[in-house]
Image 1 (cartoon, helix red, strand yellow):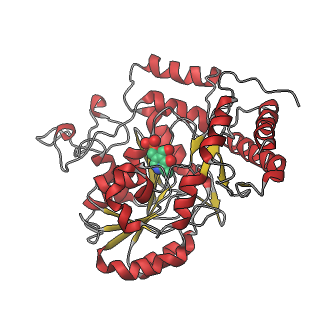
Image 2 (cartoon, helix red, strand yellow; image 1 turned 180 degrees about the vertical axis):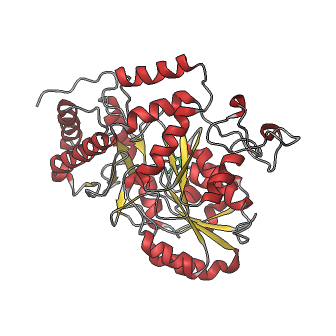
Image 3 (cartoon, helix red, strand yellow; image 1 turned 120 degrees about the vertical axis):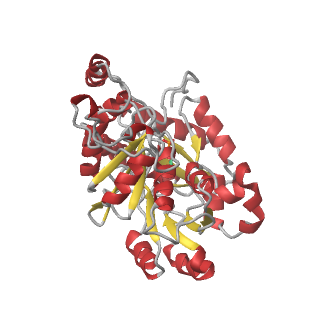
Amino acid sequence: MEEIERSVLKIGIGHINIGDEERKAISEVLESGRISEHKKTREFETRWAKYTGRKYAVATNSGTSALLLGLQTLLNDSRFPRIKKGGRVITSPLTYTATSNAIVLSGLEPVYIDIDPVTFTLQADRLEDMLKKGGKKNCMVLPVHLMGYVNDMDAINMLAEKYDLVTFEDAAQAHGSKYKGKMAGSLSLLSDFSFYIAHNIQAGEMGAIVTGDAKIQKLAKKLKANGRVCHCAVCTRSEGKCPYKNKNFDPRFTHEYIGYNFKTTEFQAALALSQLNKVDRIINRRRRNVKYLNDRLLEFSDIFQLPVYSEDVSYLAYPIIIKKPKKLPRKKIMRELENRGVEVRPLFGCIPTQQPAYRSLKKKYDRKLPNADYAGRNGFYIGCHQYLTGEDMEYIVRVFNEILKGI
Ligand SMILES: Cc1ncc(COP(=O)(O)O)c(C=O)c1O
């Protein structure tokens, strides 16, 4: 086999091609003269809600904001008296840190149960024990569909109902994944998505919550705009049609709640719409790439746990868990891959035991989350995105062969 050149980065985790469609969408925003969120954002919300099988979507400026907004909405909704400061939110320990951060920043307590070692989903059979322990302080279950693998939402929802809890999916990484024929994000009271670069639908930075509940949508729209009174889809004030026109206050500057500014821009919505037009192609291409890598890397399955392939999964990336870390430490394989131009990232880490920001929880969770600890220490991922060519895929396989033949 020819020696592989160590050169500039070739295979990224994600990529966006700014083609004619994207340029046109951005030009339309520039020509409209309105760059803060407006018609394109509303169009994206309508189409994203439809795509995910929900009635409503509320766009935000990031997935982290979507998580915070969803939690703030529930905290402000009097229908959920158990959701209050200090409440326990049962969630996944293996995730991007935003999930836990949003819980903590909302004054709630993240409580972790271990994950399935293959799909990284919550071990639903551990959930009931945790619910019995927390009693009335439990208020929510917030599973994360990591890498596109959807949690066993039937089991989670059944227990949530039994213990009178709300479920909230973190579907940031699962655009278009399916569970028993239904879309990820449509399997709980509300859910969040991220459209950060490298996600299947990407807009640079943007997020959304989706829900079937009209009150949640209305409240979320207010809270994302500093808690203001108005929540119209598109402001009709300039046309003299504002529903508050006969009131003696300006609804844009009268604040019913203490909220945030999580509004997005028309540019982000325009880019997200251009991606949504091709969503099926994006997902299929990524799935095809995962299948290809699985077939070609099968011979290394004594060294690596490769991602489970499923037609129901919409893959964020290609996750690998090292089976024999003593023989092949993660640091070594990550370095070797990067040296050969294959971008690689650690599989986030186990939040309470491995993330410095959560050091106060380390002792409490020591040895309690063996699967998340293992994946957090020995897992990594590479890209499987839609712009990778057949040649790129072949290159990845050659790189793995070259690295692994020596060990
Ligand atoms: C599982 C998960 N939740 C939340 C987020 C936060 O999204 P953002 O980076 O758009 O703020 C991410 C980001 O990738 C994520 O992977």
